[in-house]
Length: 334
Image (cartoon, rainbow, N blue to C red; front, side):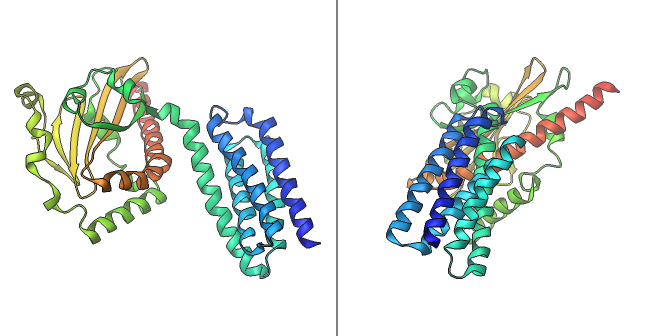
């Protein structure tokens, strides 16, 4: 009897979730992201199938994890959707939660574990949808970036563009350079953007020190792209090529373009910041290039990309855009 009621509640939650999404999602801030919505719908339907299979096979122990995960995913969707969708998805989430409690033999322990799963799933799904909703505005395709007139395109013509992030810097007037951007970023290291980003950067640096990934011995001067610079490049560069900036070293630094490189055990990577005027201020491109140093490169990048693209860069882009707008609007008003 208990299994029958739990299964009924699970399907009730699925039905409510799908109807609510179909009716109210177009009003959401995430409505331009059909792929994220499709992922949610497919996930919920898949969860329903897994629950039915679990009950049919009487695998109640692992079946209790499934409703909790679905519940968390729905809570994450609620956080991104409009207020109208919240009560309906809250009902659905409650149905999943009750299901998890009903089929759990040790209720208190399972409840605590279930809440942990809910928090993790909610956070992941929110970041997935949030990044999807803002990603079109925050990222540029390699072709779009390649259409700009920057030196990096010819210098790194044989290196793959991994991704390009776009900062829309409103205001500033004429004559802004990368030096002005650095002033705006002065109190915003990647690790200081928020606690989660600081934690991720801290873990990466700790692993790097523990395993020697970033040791000086991995930097081979003969492979540096500094050797590709022309006499004109050297004359225009405002910083000595090879100047160290933490893990990166400058290749060249022009008034509105800076290219730096890093060599370690995981990759030979390049970081390019390029600034150009726009109709309402400036556009700052933040391009990442990656050159393989072995089979480990693709594996490493695939492991860190979800964190980079869902958390680190979207947070950094938004913060710098707000800070730039606030500083230069104050400057103009004065």
